[in-house]
Image (cartoon, rainbow, N blue to C red; front, side, top):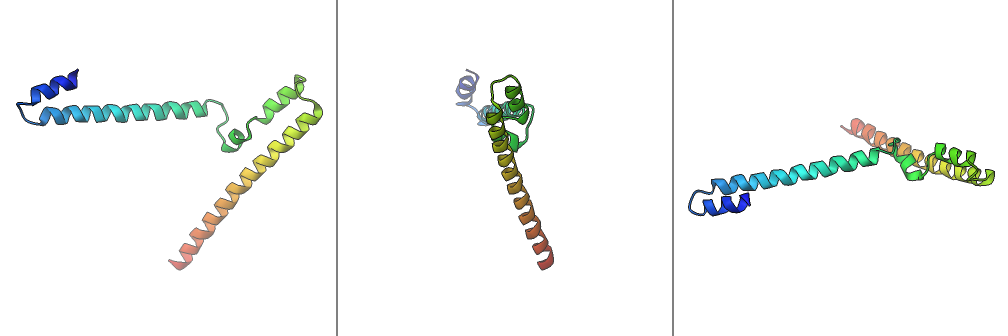
Amino acid sequence: MLVVQVLQASSDQSPGPIIIASLVLIGLGVAGFLLVSWVRRRMLESDGDTSDASRQAGFSLFELRQLHKQGKLTDEEFARARDAMTAKLRAVTSEKKDMHDKTEKNESGMDEKG
């Protein structure tokens, strides 16, 4: 409504009101994007543990222990799930360590050349 009124009023006048209305619409778009980004980040962090490795594993070790304690997992199922989880966490940790080592190696190589 406001934009239409501004456009009608500005047809006989300078382009100032159109520019202001455009800036208001752009500002609302940016504010909406920031709000959605913030809500999304909060929802991803709401699970308590925000580490990438535990998020990729699917379950936490605590949850597996609870299921085992409640009798929903047998000893064999718990051991298999625990082993799979620790293997996956080791792989993720190893990948991150390798990336870190490569980064350090590249940076030290640049220092020697520079």
